[in-house]
Image (cartoon, rainbow, N blue to C red; front, side):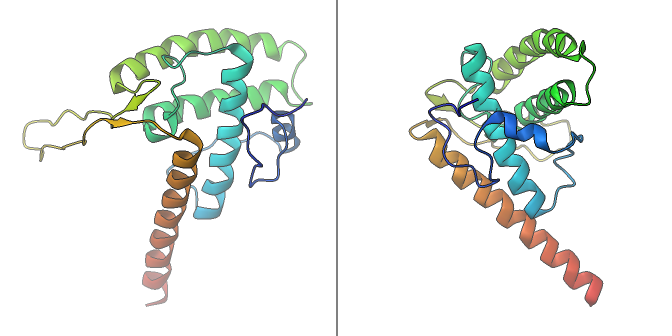
Length: 178
């Protein structure tokens, strides 16, 4: 399978989505990944989401360009990706792909709901609004921005996330040493 035309060279070393099947599938908990793991998983997920969008012709009300900036979309797409890996891995049952297709149909409905709630669109994005409970400090999510270069934004986002994780790892390591 050839890569989708808008797939840049992948830092994880993958050339196509089928290369993702070379590793055994494992669930991803984004809260527990270290910096190195997160960088790999971000690029794997991005490669797969681009493949998914292109293969199934998904509109931005299901998979918007800035999906990576919305935790609810990251978790939903990541779960669907893990399920795809499990269902299409060489060790899967021959009937597993039909199970994935059934789950994919259900997931598309949830993705539409998430995109509607968070308010991201094809050409504009804003942080997901957070409801403050009584006694909470109100959160200002920030304003809407124009989407200009999705791939550059993704690269910047991943770099920031990896640096944040490295800083946290350094703090934890210092506390363990000190």
